[in-house]
Image 1: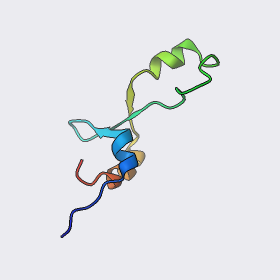
Image 2: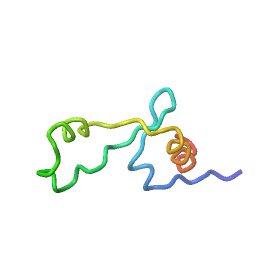
Image 3: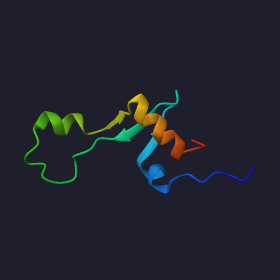
Image 4: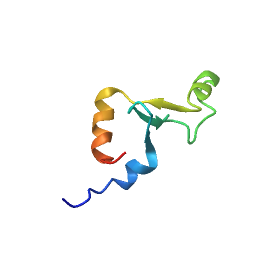
Length: 65
C-alpha cells in the first residue's frame, strides 16, 4: 500500500491531543475586534476541542496523526 497524503490545510489548522481528540483554533479573531466583547476575546484566546462529528471529518484528512 502506498502512503496516504494528509490535507495540507488540515495540517496547519488542527492538532490531535494525547487522548485522540482534535484541537483547533477559535474563529472570529482576525479583524473587527472592537465590536467583540472582552469576554469573547478572552475565551477565544487559546484553542478548543472540536465536536465529535467535526473531529471525525478532520481525522480523515490527517490519516497518520
